[in-house]
Image (cartoon, rainbow, N blue to C red; front, top):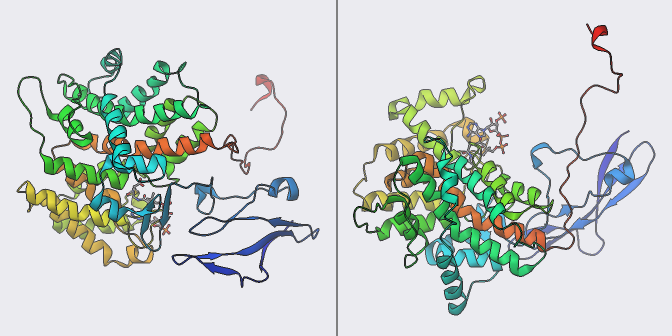
Length: 455
Ligand code: CMC
C-alpha cells in the first residue's frame, strides 16, 4: 500500500499568514492511500509561533498504518505554552520573553515564577514566592540516612535520582495530582529542596558534614553555602560567583520537549507520583548526549590537554569509526547557534577575570577548539555549533565545583521546567497516557518447541 501526503492551500488565505515574527504555514494536508484512493484529512494544529502541527492521531484507525519517526525529529508530543525555540534563528523564549533579556535583567527565582505561572510577578507576588521557596529548603532528617546507604564514591546524579524518587514515599498520601493547590505545593517544594538534595550529595561524596540551608541567603548563595561551607569556620559567599550561577540557572531553566522533560511528561502521564516523575527526568538528564555533556566536555578538554593536539582530536571526531564526538557541540534543534552558549561564553570571561584566572588554560583550549571546529567543513556542513554545555563546565570549574557536580547543577536549574511541564500536562483534562507504537521487526508468530526438540 502506498500512502502519500498531499497539500492544498486553504482558500482565501494564500496558504501562509505572518504574525510579525514567524510566518505560519496554513495549509491543509491529507494522506491518501494510493491503492484504495481512501483519503484522510489531517487537521492542522496551529500554535502562536513556529510550524503547524499535523494531527496524525487518526492515521492508524483510518488507514491502518503508523507514522514512524524515531528520535521524534518531526513529531510534537503535546501543545505547550511554556517555552518557544526557533532553532534556525537561535531564538529561545520563556513565556514569550527572550532568554537574553531574562539573563540580563531578571533573577532565577523570578524566572521560576514566570515559567511556573506564565507571567512576570508583581513585587508582592515575587516576595511571597521567594519567601516560600526559602522556607522549604530543609529536607526531612530521615533522608540523611538514605545518603549513608550510598557507597562513598557514588555519582551525585545517582544519589539525586534516588533521593528525589524517595520523596514520593514522604509525600505520597498528601499529593493529590488533581488538586491545583497540591500541584503548586509540589512544584514549590521541589524547587526549594533540590539545591539541598544536590549539595548534600556533594558533601557525602567528599565525606564532609552536611550543612543546613541558610534561609536568609538567596537561592544560588544558599547553594554555594551548602556546598562549600564547613561547620568549623565562617564562609562568605562570593556575590560574583552567586550571580554567575544565577545567570547559568536562568539559561538552563527550561528547553521545551527535550529528553528529560519528555521523560517527566511520559512518566507523569501515567498519573504516577510527581516526585517519581522528576526522578525519571534526572536519570534522563544524566546521559552524555543531554545534561551529562557538561561533565563530558571537561573530561574531553583534559584528555586533549594541549592546543597543539586540537587538530588530531578533531580528526578522530570526524572519523565515524572512532565513536568520538565533540562534546558540547551540536544540537537537535539549534542549527545556527545556541543563544545560551553565546551568553555563557561572555559569563565565562567575566567570572575568570573576577577570579584572576583570565589565562585559564582550559578556557584557551576551549576557544581554540571552538575556532578550529567552526572553520572546519565537517562541522559547517552539519551545522554543528557550541551548545549550552560547551562553556558552562569551565565556569563551574572556576567556581570550584567538581566535575561530577556539573550535571547536578543542570538538574537544579531544570527542575522548574520539569515541574512546569508536569503541571501543564496534569492540569490539562485532555491529557492521556503517553503510549508510542512501534514497527515490529521480530520473529513472526511461531510455536513453542519442547527443549528436547530444539537444535
Ligand atoms: N561531534 C561530531 N559529530 C556530530 C556531533 C558532535 N558533537 N553532533 C552531531 N554530529 C554529526 C553526526 O555524526 C551526524 O553526522 P552524519 O550526518 O554524517 O551521520 C550529524 O552530525 C547529525 O547528528 P545527529 O546525531 O543525527 O544529531 P542529533 O540531533 O540526533 O543529536 C546531539 C544531537 C546533541 C545529541 C548531538 O549533536 C551530540 O551528540 N552532541 C554532543 C553531546 C552534547 O553536547 N550534548 C548536549 C546537548 S545541549 C544540552 C542539552 O539540551 O542537553
